[in-house]
Structure formats: C-alpha cells, structure tokens
Length: 333
Image (cartoon, rainbow, N blue to C red):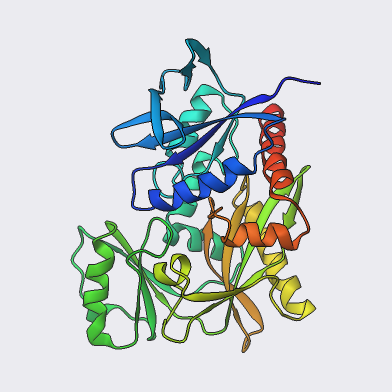
C-alpha cells in the first residue's frame, strides 16, 4: 500500500468570513480519509500562518517553501486543500503563491479566482459567453457617486463587489433608500455592484470535475423565510432560510440550469468544486446567473455537502476525488 499523502488543509483568512472558514475546515478535516491522507490544518491569519492542532497554533509555517516542522522534522505537502472563504484564499492570492511553489491545490486557478471574486467582472465574462445575467452598475469609492443617476429598474440589490456570504448586501425598492444602501456596501469594499432584481425561483448548484468530466450536482432551491426579503448573510448562516435538496423542478428546468452551470465552469476554466447561484425567470423560461462561489461552504449543513449526499456519495469519497483531480490536473500541466 502506498504511503499516505501529506495534505495541507488551509483555513482562516484575513476577512470577516474566517468564522465560516473554520466551520468548513472542521467538516473537511473530519471527512478526509486518514488512511489515504496525513492532514495538517494550516491557519492563515493576519498575525501569521500557523500549523494548528485542535484549537492550538503549535508552530509557524515557513513561507519560503510552505513547510512546517513536526516533532523536529520538516514536513512538506503533496497537495493543498483550500477551505478558506474570502481573502486571501478565495481571491487568487494564495493560488498564485502555490503556483510559484509548484504545489497542486483543490480550487480554481489564481486568474479564475481573481475574476470570480469580483462580481462585476464575473457577470461581464458570463454575459460575453451568452449566459443570462441581470443589468448592473459598477461603482468605485474614489469616484463621485450620485444615486439619482443610476439608471436601473427598481428594485435593485446593492452589494460589495468582492467576496461572498452577502455581508453588506441590501435590497432597495425606493430611490431614496439607494444612497444609504450604497454607503453600507462601501463599508465592506471599495467597489459596489448595483444590480436589477430578477424575479423567479432561486436555485444553487454545485459543479466539480471528476476524472476529467464536468459534473453538476443535484440543485438546491433556496427560499428565504417570510420575514427575510432575500437570501442574505443572516438567511445563509443563521437558519433564516429553507433549502430544498434536491430541488423540486421539471426536467426542463434541471437541464437548463445544469447546462448553464457546466458552460460557466468551462468558460471560467474552474477547478475544484464551485457553487453557482441562479434565478430561474419563469417569464423568459431561462436561468439568470447571480454569482459564482469558487470556495463554497463545507459545514455539515452547507449546500454542497447536502448535494453530495443527494448524489449518494460520501463526503470522504467526494473530498478524495477533489484531491485526485487536483493532482491529475497538476501533472497534466
């Protein structure tokens, strides 16, 4: 039997999403097959990068070669499992670092991660590729902004342009509320996206590559609770929404969402598992892409683990498949 591979499970991060990263890392760690993998948790924080055992940061990471010392011996890694939401794990910065070191990782490339982390650039590329997206306006903090000059049909969503988890996001139905919503979003980011609301059912679908083939997972329908106007941070992470996996929908709806998801994965040259959010507009009978989450949540209750179970896969097999694909893609370069 071959020796277990050394896997660095990278978590933490420099943003407010670190709290979600730690939850994801627990699930990933618990479901990585320890007969195949020696798993080392690497906690990336603003104060330093640490090898973490339990809740204790036991030693610093040598950033020169991304190695650690365990019991007096140097440990290097065969593959990196990125379980970090927000910067620097979801925006391409870490991926660029690992590329320089020649380390394979279970995520999109540095270029893809950087583009998809920017919501406006994501929808622009998707639209160019023929994917349906909402009309939007891209705002920058350093430029003068007059909310009255934003020519979009209300209601609109106002959200920080970079990142996920819907922190800083607002739904605006009245013109007079637009300015304060923009200010709120600018507290989270120097760029803001104002986007027309597409009405319809909200679906989200996981996509990954397995043995070279792009696979779509059973999609989930997301319904915010009656007291929630939309699927925001509270709805996502504080149980204020209902998630139906697999979604109850016609074969036509499933096929259109799945086909669009596969096309997006291919167009953006994605890697690892991603999750794509859609609104299915029944008037046009088409799915509209909202955004791409290149490192979706992996807590036990998160949507991707739900969809893995709906595929009748075990998380152990799924995470092993992501590592195997990362290694195969790296060898093919």
